[in-house]
Length: 407
Image 1 (cartoon, one colour):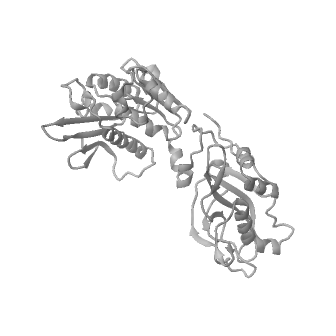
Image 2 (cartoon, one colour):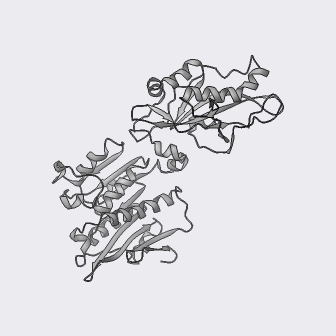
Image 3 (spheres, one colour):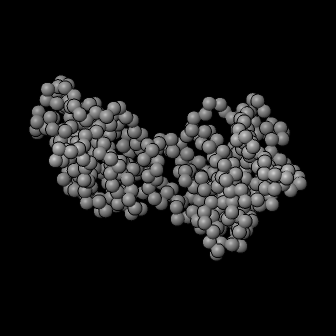
């Protein structure tokens, strides 16, 4: 996995951040945040305490240039007080929490501050990060510096050239940091995912999973990529891709985005155990019952939890109708669920899906159901019930869910 070291890149690309470091602020970086430790402040008894400021970094490009999101900051510490022992007015914007990495475990954010500078009698935003930090540091630390002139010094020159946790992504995941859900995203980072079948639904499943921080994604498909595949899979068509193996096409599309994507041109059956060493979860995205049967034998035998997806469409003289399915097979109940016949295990008459009807939105939705259920299992999304079998009816847009106890 590629290590994303931010300090030198951010300092070299941003003059305002470089000025903070040169001035002496204790600067470090954590994901999409700039952290400034060693900010002194007073409590109501005029006792000295130390806090930290956190401010969000919004990437402008992929090379380290960043800008501010807004005029606010987050603060780790109690609400600072003035010389009179009263909380400093006009900065409090309420309580706030932020989950940072283990490298910044000492920075426990408790509140948000908001204070726009007044220029010409008008409240305006800050021109840059330096002006922003200088303003807030003056408000927060000013009283402490007056009471403890020898001790309360925010300019400690204690900047930390951070060594953040490794990332699979080649670009900073600014979406996760912007939404402040890094702690939830981290629940996925130890997974090794297998996606069996890179057709329509499998291709969308791959696209969704590529954007998660899972450690590794292994994809399996022995087929070639043709024009009809482009009409029910994500991404644009490059004519040079036609006739290549699907695995090679998608490997080329995603290798510049992240590490850990390993797509191979092979079919999976009961004898493919060596390719699944270390796999923690699998998605089965095939449309042949006979292929599904061998894959189930493999996954159940290896004790790998998996979600199988399926689609059944028909046309009776008018619009298409049909169902989408996503079924979760936990290791301890997979065999008994299999016997329920929830997924097709035999090759029946060809349906419209297998004749390559261009239904990208259904493939994408089928994949989304599977990926959302997986994320529920990992605690990323809340789950009111533990649903194992999901059916979506195209006619009325209703989703019916069943728990493994109901099946």
